[in-house]
Length: 143
Image 1 (cartoon, rainbow, N blue to C red):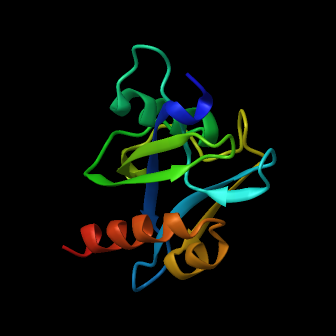
Image 2 (cartoon, rainbow, N blue to C red; image 1 turned 180 degrees about the vertical axis):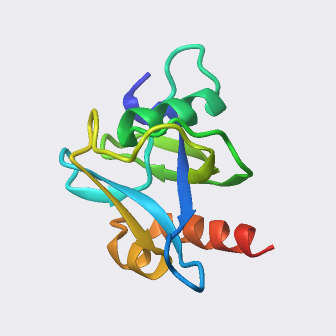
């Protein structure tokens, strides 16, 4: 079986908070910069053998951003072909920063983290496939 025949399974989180000191409560999301790909995206990664999507999402956010978060609502999954030509499916969860342990900091495969407003995140995200996730998070939080 070639790489193109294997679906890669991954999970991640859209960590969010309300910017402190803002009268209107500006929503911010956490993006990470991965030097290997020179991209800005949400923290995510492949499942370890025997690991659930939920456990992988929590682990990856902690490994990449230094935050131990609890899962919120599940967001839409993304499906795409990765850089090695494999089909990839990523399941995503909203993660509230107020429920997190730790402080956001670059770690592991990441050399930068940024808390950005929704508009700033929309402009900085490297992949169009991440934009519907951002929209889904905003819709969820407006309910």
